[in-house]
Length: 216
Image (cartoon, rainbow, N blue to C red; front, side, top):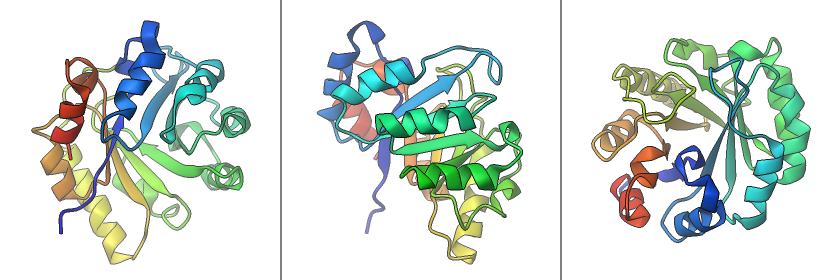
């Protein structure tokens, strides 16, 4: 049986001047999740949007919202995003001294909790959190900007995380973000990925539905 893959279009690459229409177009496809990147200009060299824009997106979105925090103070975002109704929330372990505590804080606020691994972050980072996380987000580019090329050794990292998951009977999902396209997607799925984030590959096209299907 073919594995069911969830596609999460990244709204960072959409046309924000017509975001309501962009959301409607994406939700007419087979996409399963809407991915949102929150950047603070400190942890990564870029600024995006915060809670007010996410609240606006939530007003029009029916799909679950997946927020990736690229910020130095992730704990401060938990309650505001929970109040908005965000479904998935992930953070970089480099930004939080007490990752275990923050994961429980996210989960206690009825959101799925994930940790993010940068390209240079070792896959063993998940070992002492694997029992409590709902997902791990593997960055296959260096975070901060869309449209980057896929880093090939990410496949090895995903495969090792998947092997660890299977060996220890863990249930967390593996999400991948960065340089995802129709050529890379089958390799990611083979390595063990469950959720594929794609931005420019989808939004730089004239047919969102076709691009989403090509990743599944």
